[in-house]
Picture 1 (cartoon, rainbow over the protein chains, first blue to last red):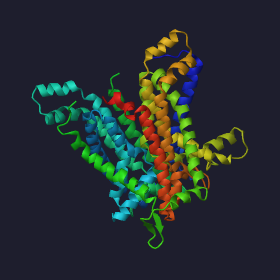
Picture 2 (cartoon, rainbow over the protein chains, first blue to last red):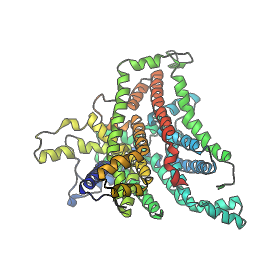
Picture 3 (cartoon, rainbow over the protein chains, first blue to last red):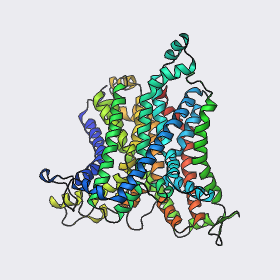
Picture 4 (tube, each protein chain N blue to C red):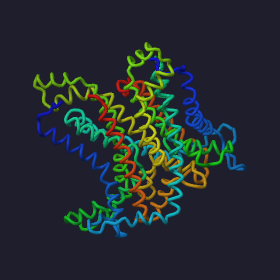
Length: 264
Length: 288
C-alpha cells in the first residue's frame, strides 16, 4: 500500500532508514573487509592484494581455537536445552487461557536482566553452593539469555497450526498424541529449527554472562575481548569477521525462508 | 485449542524450574544479600542487617554513574526511536513486499550477531586513523584527526544506538501493522498531507509501539557493558562496568546494592510497560 505521494517526506523517511542500516552494518562489514588486507595497518585492501593469510594464520592460534571449540560445545548444549524448554513453554502458552499474558511475561523476564548482573548472581551462588565453573555453568547463564528469543520464535510458528486441522484429525480417530506428532510437530518444525539456530548464535556470541561463569577455559568472546584490548591484530579481525559472517548468513537464511512462507 | 496431550501445568514445570532456579533465585538472593554486612574475617558477608552497600553508592560519585547511565540509556532510546520510526514506516507503507522482506531480515540479523564484535568494529571507523578521520582529512575539512570521535561519550552513544536499534524497530512495525489503512486513506481523501496524517492519525495509533520501543532500548542500554568497554574514554563508566570493577576488589555488598538498584529500575519499567500496554499483546495476532 502506498500512502505517500509527497516527495520530501518520502525522501526524509528513506534517508533516515538508510542511515540506520548503515550504522548497523557498515562498521562490521568494514572490519570484514579489513580482515582480507595483507597489511598490518587496518584499511580496506585493494582488489589485487586480497588475501586469506590471516584466516590461515588462525590455524596456529591455539588459544583462539580452544576457545572457539569450547564456545561451540556450549552453544550446542544451550540450543538443545533452550529449544526443548521453549517448546514446552510455548505449548503451555497455547493451552493457557486467562493467565497466558502473565506466563508470557514470566518467560520473557530473563531477557531484561542485564548480562553482568545475571552472570554475577549465578556465579556467586554457584561458588557458595560449591559448583565449579565449567561449560555447564556457562550454559546455565546462556539458557536464560536464549530462551526468551526461542520462545517468541516457536510461539510465532504456532500460527501455522489451525484448529480445524486438529479437529479433522480427531474426527478421523487420531489420538491427541498422534495429532501432535503427525500434524502440529511437522507444522512448527521450521520454528523449532529457527529457535535452535538462534539460540546457538546467541550463546556463541554472548560475552558478559560468560565472563563471570566460564571456568578455566574461557569462551571465544571472552578471549576475543582480552585480545581486542591488548592491541588488536589482523588475526583478531579475521576471527571476528568470520564469526560475524557466519551469524549473518545463518540468520539471513532463516529470515528469508520464513518470510517467503508467510502468506500475505 | 487443545494441542498437546498434557496439562499446561505439566508443560510449565520444566521451564518454570529452569527460570526460577537459574534466573530468578540468584537475583532474589543477590537482592537479599545486598542488605547483609561485610565480614572481614571471611572475606564474605554475614547475615546482619546493614545498609553499608547502599551508603557506599552515595560515596565516590557512584550515584552519578547510575544517573549518567540512565541519561545515556534514555538518549539512546530517543535516537533509536527517531531512526526506527521512519524505518518501520518505510517497511509498512512505502516498500514493496519484496523490499519489506529484505528490510525485515536485515533488522532481524543484528539480534543474533555479536555486540562485542559490532562495538569493536566502530573503533576502526571512529579512531584517529579510522575511516571518518581519514575521509575528513582527505577532503580537507580538518588538518588533524578529530580526537573526540573515539573513546568518548559520543562514541558510546553511537555504539549503543547501532547495537540496540532493532529493539525499537520491531515494536514499531508491529504497532503499525495494526493501524487500519482505511483510516489513513480516509484522512488523505479529506485532504490531509503527510505531516497531518502523521501527527493526527499515525502517531496516536502507534503510541503503544513507541512506548514499547523506548522501553526495550532503554532496558537493554541500561544493562549494556561492551559498548562502554570498547568505545568509552578513560574512566568512562556505566552501571554494568562499575559492578565489574567493584567485584574485582571483592566488594560484595556494594556490587549487590548497585545490582539491586538497577534491577528495581528495570523491572519497575517493564512491569509499568506491561500494565500499560500488555507486552504479550504485541505478539498476539502473530502467534494465534
